[in-house]
Image (cartoon, rainbow, N blue to C red; front, side, top):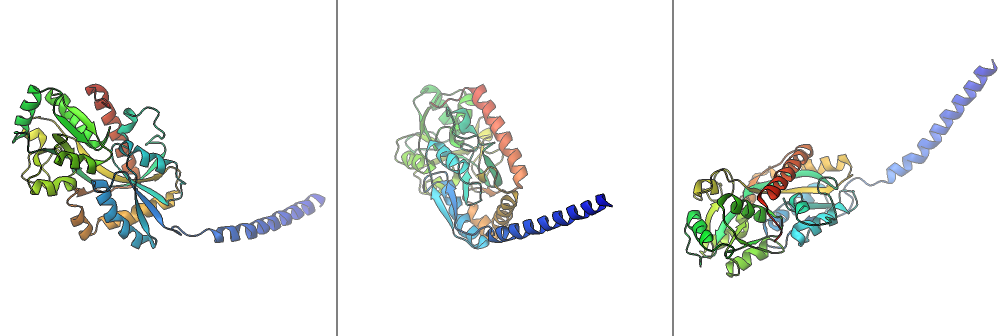
Length: 331
């Protein structure tokens, strides 16, 4: 009888304690604002005028409308996007800092930069890819080459003299040109800049002779004759420049190097927030007006966070292998 009485007393005490705890927790939960409750920062990991900046400014106002909060673009160029990557990786994992990055700060920089301040696979959480395209191989008109084969002939006759500009060490342009050098057996002089915009401007000015650049950053100069396109790095011809041959078609069989942009947040961000961001951004990128606005950058490309994570791992492995096997360096 005593045991039953004690058990009943314990049960009553336990139920009372649970009720008190519930009353204490409920106000705390009620105080937590629904996401998002304040403006969001979208870090563009290049300087203004480049492809990443352009894409960020297409997405930001529409994402702001969808979330009911302002989404502000914050340009953070430097170290081929690694400054932006570090800032994002070390931000609070609360969904209020997003980054639009590329192959450099989401992968290949780790093979070029000593003591990288963050691990792109461990410290960042993928949300979705945004756009993919091939970098256009463009040259300054002072070079007499009218085709890729002619450019390669000049490069072989003048090893180490032709300078190519890139958005930075380990960026898509650097990797694309490094792969071209290895496969075509040529030697070029690498001149890295802090972003695609400065690289293109210096190419137009004749400070360098060639570059792999995003379609958006060079289309105006191509149309005006201030830059000459020779080929594109994708496996298939681009919808943006359908008459431009691929590098594989133009003289380097088997060549393929594409560029892409994607959105990430800090690791350990709640999965519910990542899923919300993925849902809203994917819906935005599916709108006809956005698809049309993105045409200058390439083809809209979205996926689940999990699929994007798998892609980032594959890119990390691919370019790490190419960098080691082909001897691509930071110089």
